[in-house]
Length: 305
Image (cartoon, rainbow, N blue to C red; front, top):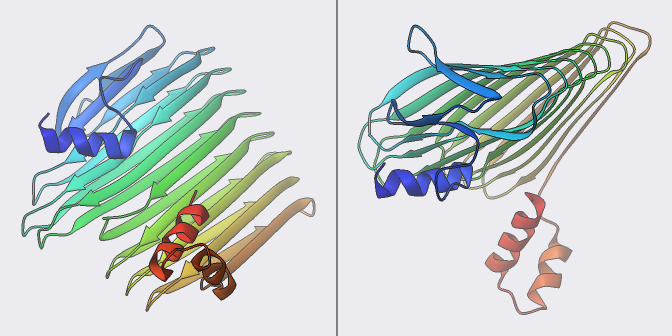
């Protein structure tokens, strides 16, 4: 990998060297390194469109890194990755994609991740998107995520996109069995003329299942965001979705929370709030010596933590 690719890798996966444990690093459509372990096996799909990651039952305190970097203008790819997480395991999966585009052609990565989470398993999934480059070509990322959770499993998803991505459409579906719990934390900032659409559909199919889908976002300049979250309660369950957004300049934000209760014992809640930075917050920080621009950045950074 060259210097640019290594720097992007640090941005999306916090990697400064070869990670411990299992990993698969993809650069400009090709493999840039792979390692399996005794408990985690990574293999290529027969059609070459992605990888399969198989985690043995009972695997504890291990990690998998599968970042993607693009530094070639005009490159477009679609990748399908399947994760098979064994029963009673406890693992961390770090993904993410970064694009460096200094050319005139659009660069695009569409990745579909399917998670099959075994009974009693615990998964933390971190996905970070990042873009940079002064070319006229756009940086486009369209992640698709499918989550299938067996009984009493737990999954936390941390989705982060702070800067540099011109267009993104994030589609996430999840189906939960009895006692399964899903927690989604999305952090997003758009600027310039960027657009970002996040769609979540969560089916709470088993008794005692629960989901908490929370998005925090900032729309600056002329950017546009849409947050569309549907919780479907098909059994005695608990679901909560929340969109909390700061709007600035000429930004636009559309929040579409939706609840569908198909059981009298389904408890579903949605919250949505969109507003500008409070004037008193700015004044308080400016009295401490910050300029208005510095005060805004401090508030935004704290909001998106």
